[in-house]
Image (cartoon, rainbow, N blue to C red; front, side):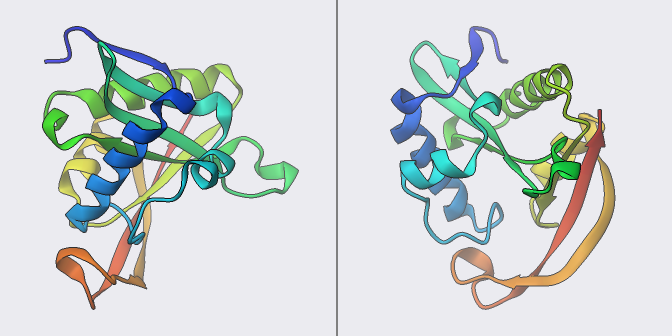
Amino acid sequence: MTTGVRIAAMGPEHAAAVLDIYTAGIATGTATFQSQAPTWDEFDTGHLPAHRFVALDGDQVLGWIAVSPVSGRCVYAGVVEHSVYVAPAARGRGVGALLLEHLLRQATAAGIWTVQSGVFPQNTASLALHAAAGFRVVGTRERLGLMDHGPHAGTWLDVVLLEKRL
């Protein structure tokens, strides 16, 4: 399934592919409240450089994972929130699992103690991915946001809060 796929540090050379994959995720209507991908500068500023990875098949980016700090307060320095996206053509091949496993290993080595994420209940593939990686549901934020695009446009959506203690 993932034969030949390798994980590499995400760099500016991956920007176009990363943002294209993000845009494809947005189009599903079950990945994010965002209605459009950020610019590369916005993406770059919002994610920690040491914890951004791409899954590659040759030079083709199949997916990406990146973390953001949850707070600027020093007591939360070991807590990050992650996002993981897989290109439509690569879904179901184990790419998301490879990316998540790699991130968790790297985060552990870097002294991060909690990785968290928020997932729409409609995104059953992401919920299954996180469950398989040992994430636990810590709660649900009900009616967190109003979708302005995708299949849930005009609908308030819940967000399932997940965490993995390292």
